[in-house]
Length: 119
Image (tube, rainbow, N blue to C red):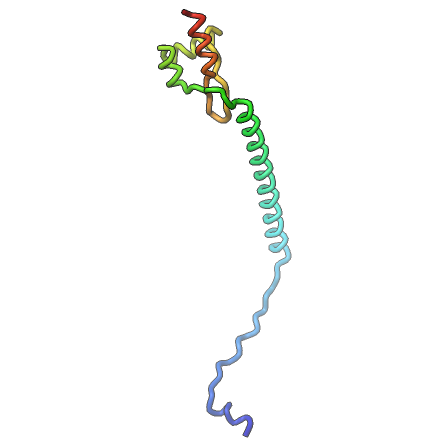
């Protein structure tokens, strides 16, 4: 009588046993890609840390210094952009400072000194 419940309860058939074929070359290829991505991430993190360190050095060296955008330099001097760049090329106007990437600014003290020497 112990096995009689099997006669009234229908159990689903057991799942088939799956045959998994492992392709070693695919596994190695994926592992190589993972290692490559990890190395790329390490390089990216290292570059970001170096960039942050450079930014901190620049920030420490420029505290208390006022930088002017081209728009501000034009307003302060009354010169157009093309005249400013022509005079920079001639060496008769202060050069802009590169802050990184495509960002440049002029030191306000340089512009003030240039204005004072003209007047």
